[in-house]
Amino acid sequence: MSKLLIIADIEDKCAATPRGLALAQEMDLTPEVVAFTYADLRRLRMDKERTAEIKKQLIAERRATVEARVAKFAGDNQKVKVTVVWAEHIHEWVLKHAAVDFSVVVKSRHKSETLGHTSTDWHLLRECPTPVLLVGKKKWKKGAGVLATVDLDASTRVKQKLNEEVVLTARHYAEMFDTDLNILCVIDVPTLLSDLDLVDPKTYAESRKDELLPAMQALAAATGLPESKFLFKRGPVAQTIVSEAAATNAQLVVMGTVGRKGVKGKLIGNTAEEVLALLRTDTLTLKP
Image (cartoon, rainbow, N blue to C red):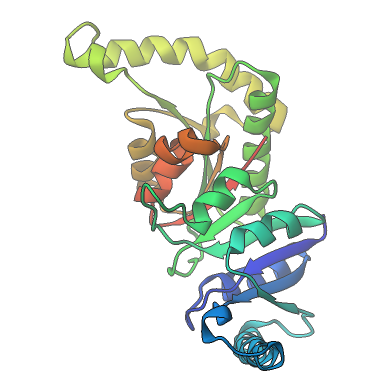
C-alpha cells in the first residue's frame, strides 16, 4: 500500500486536508485528495447539453476550491492528486476506490446519524476495508500521546490478529511522531450484577485481570512491547476509553472494529461507534 486518500469536506476549514497531507509526508505516502459535488439537475428540466454544462461548471468550481486549499498545505515538492467526483452518496465511491493500494483513508469527523439516516462516517467505519482516520479540528500537539485499545477476551484467531494489528499500528504512529504509547485493556463489570450486589466491582475486576493476564503477556510478546505499556482499567468500555484518552493526553486513539450491516448495524452501535460519539480526539479504526 503506497497511497493515502483524503476526503475533502465542503467546508473551507476541512481538517482532513492539512492533517492528511502532513501524515502522507511523514509516512512517505502519495496523497490523493478527493472532493465531491452533486446537485439533482433533473428537476431543472433542461436539455442534456445545458445539464452537462452546469455539471461541468460545478465540478470545475469545486476543483478550484480544493486545489487552492491543497496548495496552502502541501509540503515542498509534495505531489498531490486531486480528484473531483460527481456523486450523491460519497461512501459508495470511497468503498470501491479505497480498497486498492491505499494505506489509510483520512476524513473530518461528523457525528450526524439518526434512525433513518446513516452518515458517511458510519458507513466507512462499518464497511471500509482500509483503515479509517477520522480527525477533529484540534491540531496535533508535540508530546501528545497515542492510545491503543484491545479486546483481550478475543477468542478467535481473527480477532486476536486484529489486536496485534491495532498495537503494531499504534506503535508505528507513536514512533513516527516520537511520542508515548499506551495500550488500554478495559474490564467491564456487568452493570446488572453490580446493581443487584451480586458481585463486588473491585473484586470482580481483579479476578478478570488475573484471567486476562496471559492474553496480555502473549500480545506484548507478539508485538515486542514491554508489559508496562499495557494498562488495565475498570469501567464501561466506551466511557473508560474516552476518559483514559484524556488522562494520557492522547492525540490519537487506535482501535479495531467489526462492522455490522443491515438493520442490526443501524440500531446497535459497536464499541468504536460509541467511542466516536464521545471522543474529542482523532480516531484510527482497523478491520480484521
